[in-house]
Length: 139
Image 1 (cartoon, rainbow, N blue to C red):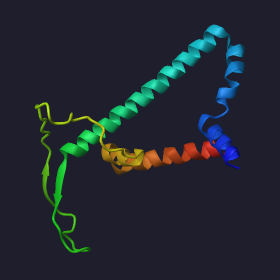
Image 2 (cartoon, rainbow, N blue to C red):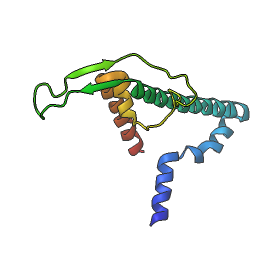
Image 3 (tube, rainbow, N blue to C red):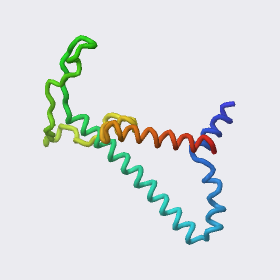
């Protein structure tokens, strides 16, 4: 039973594109097929690189942004009142401090969209994700 589940999971992650690749290259021709394959591979590489850069930026943002909240009783009107916010980025230059853009925490995509794009961008991100998952599930 585990093997069948693993095969279905592999099929969901990879898709049937890997099985149709030889036929597509044969129909398009060797030069055009390889050119398309190299182009799509480069776009996938760039997407992964951008995601790593966004994750590093989110880590740097989280490290430099310090917000202190006043401790109040739950439900009071001043529960989330900001006491102080530091927007200055202090970069340490000694050799013992970790680099600013080092990835120490992993953030989910929804959190990063909320962090960088606000609530409207986060709503758009989740809508696109739902449409993508719906499209993948009906195949």
